Length: 196
Image (cartoon, rainbow, N blue to C red; front, top):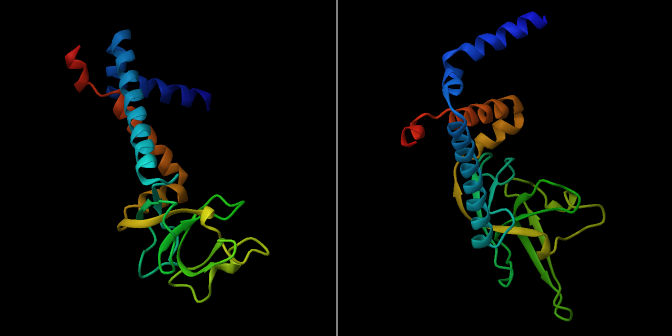
């Protein structure tokens, strides 16, 4: 078995795919890794820029279920904005997190309750396609969510763009294969080396 694996790696290394890597000098290899690092850091800067502009920790979320149909379908990509100074009203579509759970929920605010004496605001949510409100989704004994639980408000949508994320989460081998291919394409790109 080890002989087969060794032969396979030898064949892959001697193939045309890695012949470019073998011909690179140290400077070219460093340049390719630097190029890859620049791509990753640029993506992180864009994400942090969206974070600052949108006022939310998650400026983009994917709808994971059909609970908001027909407003949003599974796989739709939502762009969020959140100004904590603006009150959240009934009818708005919000993304919120329940304490102790990682995945945010996209639902509509069904009721807004404000205590006139204390100014405390409580929200009740419901999925458009659900027959009952979200109290069963909240933690035990929790009847409302508070504005601090809201991650953002849905302001725009790109239909079905998030299906890529859903497929990659449902099938992790595809995710790792795509990541490996993109990394290899970035590191083995010979076009940029013509400038050296």
